[in-house]
Length: 204
Image (cartoon, rainbow, N blue to C red; front, side, top):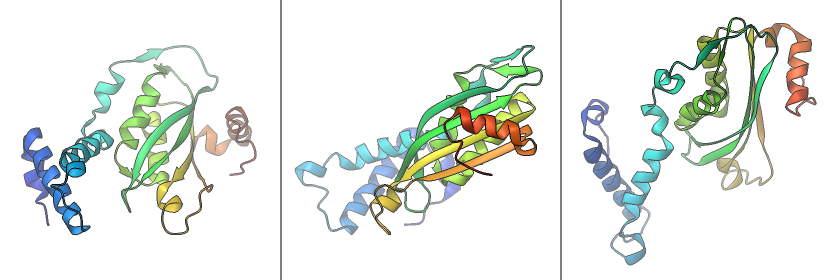
């Protein structure tokens, strides 16, 4: 069933959820299930609600997330928020991938409230994603907002599309990084960051 994107954008939220639930019900039929049986009667709505939550990043606003939490501070050492847990959906199979992200930046004139960095991670993670783009988007957003001397991001994740299907490797993980500014041009800065987040075995 082909959906008109323009139509979806102007639909009220309740109508969108109703349409999504109907599509889930149709999918159950295509899979050979009976949506009217006891265990599945409420499944279409549950799945629709879950998908809305897992993709709420499309409806998040960066300005509202930051909410003015930028402060002028004389500080030029590395700031790190490590072990930020995230969950996302792979855009290729719509299966989950999950892990943690380490974000660092070196301020020039201003710093951002520490709680805003995990919220920025969530904004991009709660979309259909690939790990490489997710890592880059977080780094570029921190760069744009704080205008620092540099930004470093390392993302570690496990992918259900590898664990449940395809190669079916249960213990494989992927590590991606994005290094901007001083983190890219200065080896010692990069190595300090990787050491502090426990990834000093990586080489870039």
